[in-house]
Image 1 (cartoon, rainbow, N blue to C red):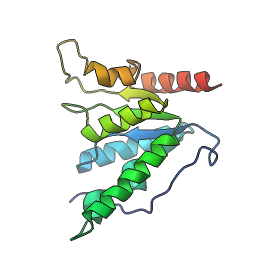
Image 2 (image 1 turned 90 degrees about the vertical axis):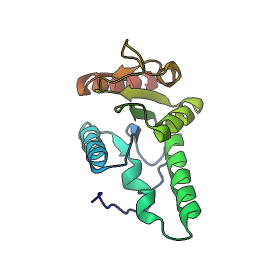
Image 3 (image 1 turned 180 degrees about the vertical axis):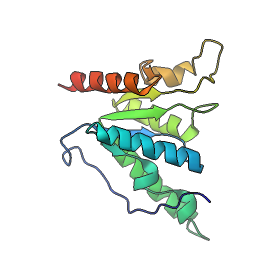
Image 4 (image 1 turned 135 degrees about the vertical axis):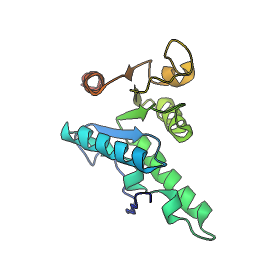
Length: 165
């Protein structure tokens, strides 16, 4: 049985929080992914960051949809996620998996277009080509900054903070 989480949508504003606001873009379609995302959120929060995790804040579409409300629910979740991307200081894109998550790719593209700093996180060895790289358009949105472990991710986040100061 998939995790059941239903929360009210919470919109951030840049004025609302004083610390670094991170949007964590990741696949969220099975228990393993949901649990992994929750662990990452807790790790980031333990470092003092505010984390928007779509599965927690906007909820999961498949849990909310019933007959006749699919478009309304999908639109609500989409708009919630967009607003939170716009109000984030940093987007971290979890690239783990055979290919990057399609929704995460869209979130990444939006953040990049709006001038929000983006970092990748990937511990998975599967990749687009033999060099270990993924699609250059995806990696380019992150300025080719992809952390391969939590220590690298923490260092990259601190570099973004320095850029803001």
